[in-house]
Length: 233
Image (cartoon, rainbow, N blue to C red; front, top):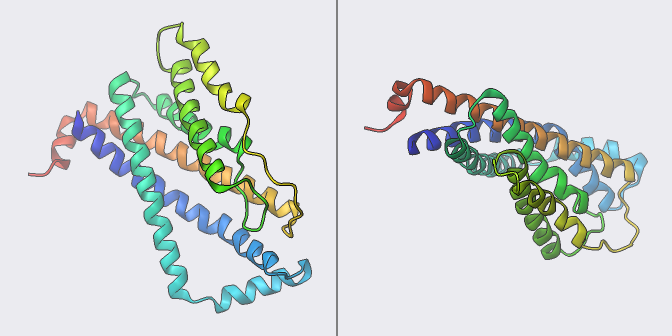
């Protein structure tokens, strides 16, 4: 059982980490570069041409290094969450294909969409609440949402359903950190694009992770020989 969890988490997490890295480099990085130009004081008419020049002149070794760090970070994140999903499948016995979609959707809701209601992804230069307050509220919301969704959809006792609803609502009833009211040089439409791109890439990450995790775990259950082949020694 332990080997199934490890194999599923490692393989599915690595694939999901690679997928989100490609999407982030294609969708988020250009928006981040534009935001850096606005933050540096370039106007809207100068931004696109400056963006092209900076990308052309940017140190390729630096770009490669940042991309590699992003890949490693996303891979470790994917493996960690993949192990959690595989352990949940093993404990709860929910390993069908649609269960993988359910796990992925739940992960997206708990760790991306619901926390983004109070602490949305933001570009550099956009006014935000203090970092510690944002991180604390995000983590509490993600954990509370995870427990709430688990109680609502995966655990059998019916008395846990109201508890799940309370856990989902509690962080939002408490309230997210207050954002200072100050003008930002970042255009609102650029911030909206970044928010949409961030949530879209996160959704892709979680759906890929959930579906591949259920597929690998189900394959190992049905074919124990495949599990033995992956085991060392």
